[in-house]
Amino acid sequence: MRIARFSPPKEVSASPLFGVVLGNEIEVLAGDPLYSGITKTGEKLALDSVKLLAPVIPRSKVVCVGKNYADHAKEMDSVVPEQPVIFIKPNTSVIGPDDAIVWPSMSKKVDHEAELAIVIGKICKDVPKERVQDVIFGYTIGNDVTARDLQKVDGQWSRAKGFDTFCPLGPWIETDIDPSDLAISAEVDGQMRQSDRTSSMIFDIPTIIYFITQVYTLLPGDVILTGTPAGVGVIPIGSTVSISIEGIGTLSNRAVADV
Image (tube, rainbow, N blue to C red; front, side):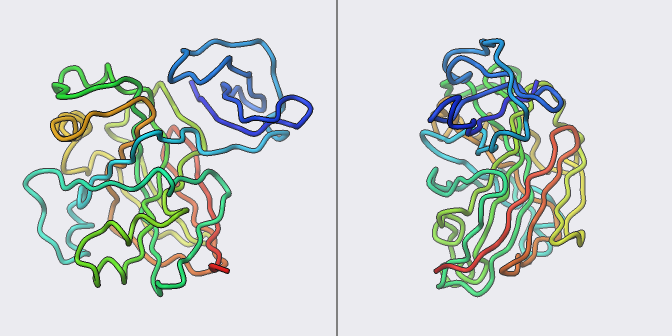
């Protein structure tokens, strides 16, 4: 099931709604499915009549896993970690499909990082690997946008990865998919940059959630970015980065200059 968050035509609602994507239509849900369950209203809208938004706005945090593909660790001149390397992006960095990635004026090198994103559905802490599926609501696509020059200058990642607009998510949440071996890719203006499979991850999803929940309590709507394959590179101002994951779809965003 594909769950989207969207802005409907003004005559339908002045506020964003949630819905189930059914081909060229979207069926409106009653409330936020993360809190009120998936309750269909029967009302359907044409998909091309709505604007898709980030499918979830994390009320708390986006937790990211770094260096989770061996080839990416190599291209960053780094060793393969022995345990997950985690960091946080603020929820204010989240944007949706077709929203603009804004190059901050203090950076000269803004890169894309294609990632499978996990959407958490329950409050959870210290989740054993065998119960990980109990806390997952679904999966979406993420772009861990990074000001690479600032990352090198700072020696840590908070500023480089935390700017507003640096966490595109979408286009929807897929609730029924096996994430263990999916094709993942990134293109910039149609040129392939990244191409791999999620089966190449060093730490699988049960390991990631088990590890993270030993550190943080996760809340409904929290998002986990699971790491990026090799091939990260600059998103030139004026270009469009499109990230695709098999069984989910494509997330596209255009890079613009800060004004």
